Length: 473
Image: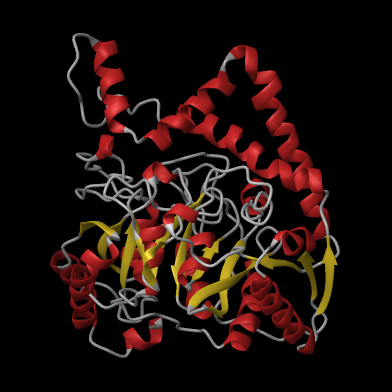
């Protein structure tokens, strides 16, 4: 459903129905970590202007968003008992806009993953095929929007953690410009790469959501004071004269000919709308360096960000004869093997003897990649690519954390948006064998309007606005 559909109905009824749907589908989807009581929020809604942009809209928050008095685990065992004493800035913004949070959604543990298979509460199931993965790390949020439980859910995106699950689940997934949305109160993964993002069922609602969430926050010194346009009112799908670059590296790396053919067919439709489309390439060496560079930088930052999760200052405490033993036991039992692996990689690159040849080199490579990517926008308004090279895979087919030659570029190209901080979103473009596929649209920094406009044109051609799937509970 769209925001407009909800706003034509009774707010309390909408919220209670969404809450009931989330509970009814929990066994099938396993998307919720904690259900949130809505009664007090509905009482607060009486003090909110009925014309507020998200008045009475039920939403879901990824479980790394701090909520005062409500358990926030980041899907990690070590934080199973963590209850924040404050709200994230976006929680306050959403409350002021009239939104009602019904649940905290499952995620890859601490945001470290792209499958939603390593959550402490178990695999999140794709609503199109419950045996398949949702994508991650914001899988629970994507699934609850795709299943029609809520029309909007918050996620976070450090590599492609909003945009990849959006592609697998057939919904719109937005990662705006770095700094556009405050990250105060978000449990971090890698601070130079983390973005707050979100999911909707259509581009217009996505544009309106950014109007609510965007803005300077003095509690987050990386947040921007850039002007916030009326994105939803200025939506314009007329592409006449728009110069669009297709990232040829990605197109060449995709092995599924059906996905390539659907993408090519969509490009022709955009050209018929007046777009000027050109296939461009970044150096192969830079594209192949994306994932290794990401591993080094993100995991080094993760080690620093999560050094306080030791069973002493935060988290579940395991027994030990001394402080060192307590910390070792708490971290060993508190984190999954996948997360411990990332901490090892991060710690290794932080060793003094390794910083020059690993971490500092990775930062230099990142700069070269970003400079090359930025050059594309000197002559183009937007860059397009297939969002994911396959439909949602089964768990044993997942290529998460593999340096596969076949998928090194096609699976990881959306890292360009995190390295550069440029806005990027996935928009559904069709179905293959009943499973969603999507196109990734990127634009210049703080030019989300162009990104939304191009995505709107794709949405109109695909006919997938408001797309949801019925899940048999």
